[in-house]
Length: 122
Image (tube, rainbow, N blue to C red):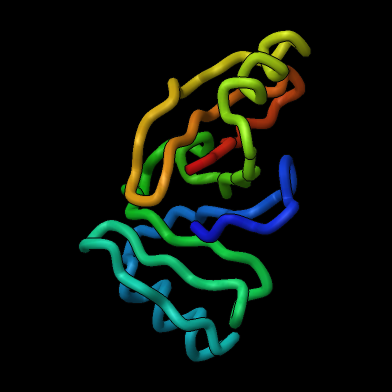
């Protein structure tokens, strides 16, 4: 994920589930002209240069519940701990604790009105 300049708390990334990463890449490349970067067999990212927003496809089983296959919107934070505290103070709930990934750290939260989003930082 690329750090957006002056984009604290802006939507920065979106992740989609795919039962077949290669087929997803072929479809979105041929229809929309998106370019991809592979991160192993279970993840491929696309860039805002071709898609309008940075994002990626992760491998999912065909019969996963909707909560595991719904698109995941990822918000950038310049201060991950402060944003997590604000989520909790506003009544949100952390549903995936902060973890590291290549390029940063993130956590997932439920907003109390039916949505799960993620927040990331370096």
